Amino acid sequence: MKETTEGIQRRAREDRYHGHDYYLVDELLTEEHRLAREAVRDWVKQEVSPIIEDYFEQGKCPTHLFKGLAEIGAFGPSLPAEYGGGGMDEIAYGVIMQELERGDSGVRSMASVQGSLVMYPIFKYGTEAQKRKYLPKLGAGELIGCFGLTEPDYGSNPGGMVSRLHDDGDAFVLNGAKMWITNSPVADVAVVWAKDDEGKVRGVIVERDWKGVSAPEIKGKLSLRASITGELIFEDVRVPKENVLEVQGLRGPLSCLSKARYGIAWGAIGAALDCYDSALRYSLERIQFDKPIAAFQLTQKKLAEMITEITKAQLLAWRLGTLANEGRATPAQISMAKRNNVHIALQIAREARQIHGGMGITNEYPVMRHMMNLETVITYEGTHDIHLLITGHDITGISAFK
Image (tube, rainbow, N blue to C red; front, side, top):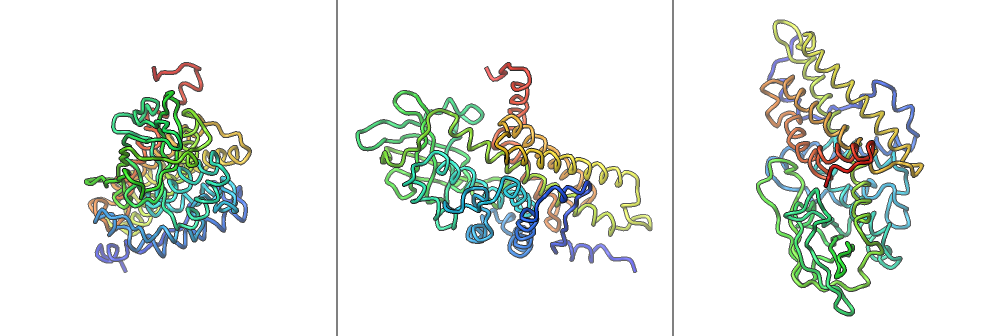
């Protein structure tokens, strides 16, 4: 008996996803990697999939998920357990981000900002006192963090930042503003980058309830609608010197960005897989001209190209993860993976939308939400073009930025 369009539509929101592994990449993963992935996949199906379309449509962040993200080990999976992390390796971190972004890019952003852009710099550049004070609570989701680097006039060129730290004896006085900051309106702490009196970039840990700190929410987003984004404004904020990180220069924030970009390179595959999974299932169930649309050559072309690009991205991420575990992954290699994997995910989302026809623009299916989200993911943490130029610089030795 043929299933009606209405029947397909009713079942669309059921999370019937299962993984796709055309080249048996799972055989390259350890049991720990697979167990971590399955645990996060189950959590996404139970906690994210049933609510995410409604939160996205309303433009609200499901902040109650922060605690669940902590419980499944999504905050700093590859940081030491003694500091609130998961004590796992970089591939485990990657597969966790992949499963979260399969649910929604905004949910993955909630986790990757907390782990890679807040916990990681405190672990990497913080004093022992800073680590003990902040990391366990961040890892447990008792504190929410954000990362202040981008400014209203300085995004791809962070070195041009105008935020300032003035030495005032026992404290630094912080003035400036940051823009497009994930989690900032709900954050308890922020890792903020500004220039000191000598023009050197310094990192400081700022607490939200300090006098002079504000974090207004940015409204009107048509992408990452389930992720809360805001500004960070600092007006004569006194930052105790005990809250200054032990690093100077752009290498501090850029190393954090590499950690986050690595997670995105894995995460984008999750969004691509969800779009492919939905398109494949829909094409097998949708009947036109007395047969499923999967029987038509053009549909098969789209599906075959999708799984080909996903497979290439999976292998790219796995190799990058192997290099990261060995301490050999370079920022340029991470840039290549981030750029490629987000790009193919966005292309797959667009093709999947076409396979779904008119239903593809509705929230009965996840593809339009993923497509809209990926328009942000392809821009933040280094734009598509900037990552291309990073690769160009790496292979030629010539910088095209100046």
